[in-house]
Image (cartoon, rainbow, N blue to C red; front, top):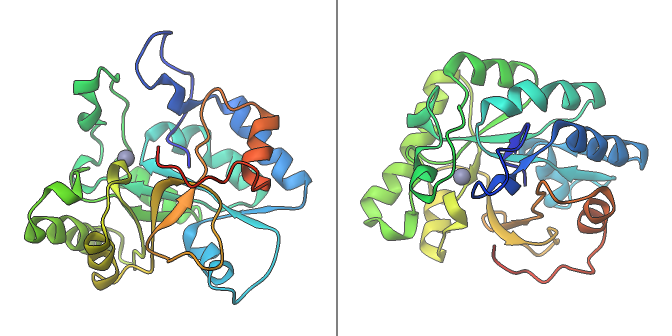
Length: 235
Ligand SMILES: [Zn+2]
């Protein structure tokens, strides 16, 4: 689970740790490739998660649809022949991380419709992260359903193809919310529960490994390739 790929904000800025330096991202992808692993979008990963395919693969996701991911991560992904999923906030195309501002997190631009299309046409996946980056369990069931279902419909209208990957904003979900995502027609949904996916995981509550600015290459490989620290904690 990545968020932004770019030069981190100045020291002391809240959550600057979620911006991974392009050099570190490149090193991480290079090592996984060298070790024989292929990075995949959720769409491409699904057969492996379902046990229908076997191989040395790992999922790559980006939350929120940041422009710096298009600029800094796409060339690296393309170079290694990897695919990935970026989860877009539909009402913030060409906007920013407005939901973060109150926490003092600086503005960062999100991809426009054209940029999202570039992302998709380069073979990368577009997933949904709701319409407005909401805390789904805090909404009425009707409003939560709207955020989940209408974001899918709207992305599909804009892109002209199916959107099947969903990501719960803030990792906020409940059994009811998971059921809503499934009923809306998605095929999988990711959380912020920490860990590596297991064969018995539900496809609507997939855990992830957080990669932060401070994650050095040894920690990165430990986190991605070993279950030593697989404690299934929530971020
Ligand atoms: Zn998010």
